[in-house]
Image (cartoon, rainbow over all chains, first blue to last red; front, side, top):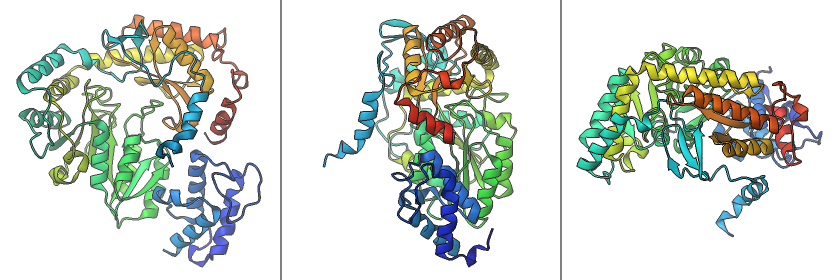
Length: 86
Length: 424
């Protein structure tokens, strides 16, 4: 795990894309605009696993309260970057 | 824009379900014969899904107490506990609960649902953290929504995951860990000793919802907390009167020195009418009985073991080890519906449970037993589970489970099943 403070938002995005691989069943290209629900067909169970994977990777907490606002990959990497910055 | 248009997907999904033989969400008990029997669709039916664990709904002392209160105090209080809705009976019930649990404080709410809403939303404000088990009941999730706290889910019954999450949050904020003693869908028990140990190592408060475990676990029926020997470390125990206590209402008990302030801040306590006197009287009578009636607990456990072992022997896949809740896993939605209505036609009522009420996207036939069930009734349940199960191919003719791929399916079950298999 890299020291969190060193990560740029772009690096966070790259890491999130890597973490998304096991959830990308259709093998579509992941962009910042990829939608978890409509493009990746993630159900609530998969979302929970994905969130846990991101939390573990960056050693952060992503509260349940934030999830409704995180619909696309770019929103997640921005939010994660914000959380890391503190 | 029609406000109800947003429910179109649900309306369409429901219309597609094969309700060939009645709607599982519209069952009517036309006549109630006893704790274990009712008339449904004109047929005398064994009730195997009513959470009536201690059979208190027809206890003669509870009925007598309710009658007396009804005759002398009327049908309702028509007011909040903090206005005109506290009668001597409400105080007496709280005293009885505190004595039963050996705690300094007890507070009674009008439903179990409101007990969780009230406790969770009052305890945790905008600067606090709520750590809840992922399989928590809707009332816990709704309590979280009602609070302004930051909500973090940990993996179901996973102390290591809770530990990790508490470590990330750190010690400088208020933290409440919320778990259930017995989870209502699969009937699986929380590893409470380990969870409490983790919570306390981080200095977090613990709330245990004993809705399905009151009366059932522990030497005097105080629940999984008592059985696990961690009563001195659990800060708040929440429970309901609508299961083992045989009526309706909810409560919380605690030794917290500032507990009484909750009566002034918990909105689901303040802004609703209190329980009617007859309900208060029967709940008080039932709580007094539950501690002493070890015989009822033993009978319940004997019945639960008989049902669990019998179903397992028939080849059904069950959700958890023996408990008064026995959940039979059914491979897909259509088979679950047919199985449920098949059982009802055979005079057995169980609960049909679908996602999102169930965890891991699974379909369940959920049985819950009562100490009032006889061995003969349980044998009848087993016989009819076997008959319907074989008819639908859920179990093999030689009592062997058929390979999962062969179970009867329709096109529309496929995606649901795929999701469950991929993520469950």
